[in-house]
Amino acid sequence: MLRNLHVKNLALIEEAEVDFTEGLNILSGETGAGKSIIIGSMNLALGEKIPKELLRDQADTALVELIFEVTDERTKKLLCDMDLSLEDQQIILSRKVTNGRSIAKINGESVPASKMREAASLLIDIHGQHEHQSLLKKRKHLEILDDYAKAELADLKEQLKAEYHSYQAIRQELEQASVDDETRMRELSLLEYEVHEIEEASLVVGEDEQLETEYKRMLHSQKIMEAAGTAYEETASMQNGAGDQVGRALRELSQVEQYDEKVRTMAEELAEIDNLLNDFNRELAEYMEDAAFDEEQFREMEKRLDELNHLKSKYGRSIEIILEELQKKQEKIEKLRDFDLYRAKLEKELEASDQKLQKLCGKVSEIRKKYAKELTKQVQAALIDLNFLDVQFAMDFKQLPAYTADGWDDAEFVISTNPGEPLKPLGKVASGGELSRIMLALKTVLAENDAIGTLIFDEIDTGISGRTAQAVSEKMNVIAKKHQVICITHLPQIAAMADTHFLIEKNVRDNNTISSIHCLSEEESIKELARMLGGVKITDTVLESAREMKQLAQSAKK
Image (tube, rainbow, N blue to C red; front, side, top):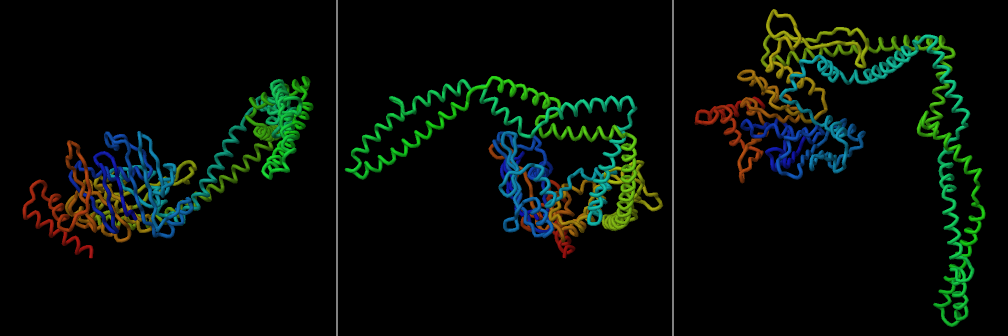
C-alpha cells in the first residue's frame, strides 16, 4: 500500500506531504483546488511523461516521492526478480526534474523510466477520469478478459506469441523464395562471387588488429629509431652519458662506504640503479638492431590491410561479422542450388506451424470463453449493485480471418440496460456515466484476484448522482476492505464513506496561488460534506444533514 506522498514545486503545490492509511482514502476540494495535480504527481513518480504545465513556475527543481509498504509475498518476489530489494518491507519511488530533465530513482538508485513503470504496475493501479472511454475500444475488452484469466492463460499466450512470430518468419521466407528461375540464377551467381571473394582472403580473426598495430609501428619507424638512438646515447656508458656518470658516482661512494653505514646503503641503492641502467641499455640496443625497416614487408602489410578494409566495407565492420556473413551466404547458396527441395521444406514447416497455431488459438479461445462467463456473471452482479436494475452483461466472440499474436478471437463486451432490449456493444448503449460505472464494476471484480495493493480512482463518479452515487460509494467500501483505495470525488455520498478524509484547498500567499492538502478530523470532514451538499452557504440544516450522512455511512461500513 502507498504510505506516503511527498510533492515539491509542482503546479500549484509548493510543498506537500501526505500520509495515506489503509481502507478508503478520500480527497475532496473545490473545483480548481489542485486535486488533479495529486494524480498528476503520482503518474510522474510512476514513470509517465512530464507535462510542461505540471511544473511550478520559477522553480529550479521539482520532486515527487512515493513510499510503498509491500507485504504480499508474490509482489515481493516479482520485485526481487527485477533486482529491487525492500528495506523494512518498503520501496521508495522518486522522480526529480531539473531544467526539463528528470532522474528516476528506486530506493535511491537511478533507473530508466521503463523500469519505474514496470515496478509501479506491481504496486498501484490508477483509474483516471476518462479511462472508462477505453471501454469503447474492443481491444481493451480482450485485455481485461486476459488479465482476469491470467493464472491459466499467461503461459499459453507466451507460447502462442512465440509460435505466431515463427509462423510469420517462415511465411515471409516462403514469399521471398517465390522467384523465377532467371532471378534465382542471377542471385546464385552473385552469392558465389561474394563467397569466393571472402574465401580467397583466408581471413583470420584478430589479424586486422595485429596488422594495424604493426603497420602503425612501421609507419613511424624513423621517428621511433631516432628517439631510441638519442635515448641510448643519453643513457649508455659512453663519455658523459647517464651510465658513465652513475658509474663514476658509484666508484666514489664505494671508496668511503666502509666509514658510514648510511653511505654503504646509498652505495648499494646506486649499484642497483647502475645494474638497471645497464640492463635497459642492452634491451634498447637489441630493439634497435631487430627493428630495421623492411620496405617490402611494409608494402605487403599495406596491401593486406587494404584488402581487409575493402571486405569490411562490403560485408561487415569486423572479420567476425564477415565470417558470419560468409556462412549465411553459403547456406543460401545451398538453398538456391536445390531450390525445389528448399521450397518444399519451407511449405512443410509452414504447415506444421499452422497446425500448432490452430491448436494454441483454439486452446486460448476455449479458456477465454470459460473465464468470460465467470467474469461477465460477476460484473453483472456488480452492475446490479451499482443501480443497473435490469442489466444483462455478456461477451460476444467472433473469429478473425487471420492469426494474430493474441490468437484469433475478436471479442467485445455487450450489454442490455432495459428489459426486452437485445445485447449491444457498449459504445452503442452506454452513456459516459454508465461507462464509468461499468469500469468500476470491472475493477471491483478484477481486484478480487489482483495482488496490487493500491487502487486510485480519479473522479470515477463523473455523470452520476442520487441513488446511483450511493451505490458507487458502497462499492468503493467493498473494494477498500481488501485494497487500499485512494479516491478523488466531488460527491458527498462517496466522501462520507471515508476511512481517512483529506481536503485539498487553494490559498493566496505573497501574491502566489498555492494548493495545500491536509487530513480532516471527523468534525472537519462533516463540514466538508456540508460544503459538498450545500455549496457556498452552509446552514445548520445542511450541516445536520452532513452529520447524518456521515453517521449512516459509518454504520453501513460496520
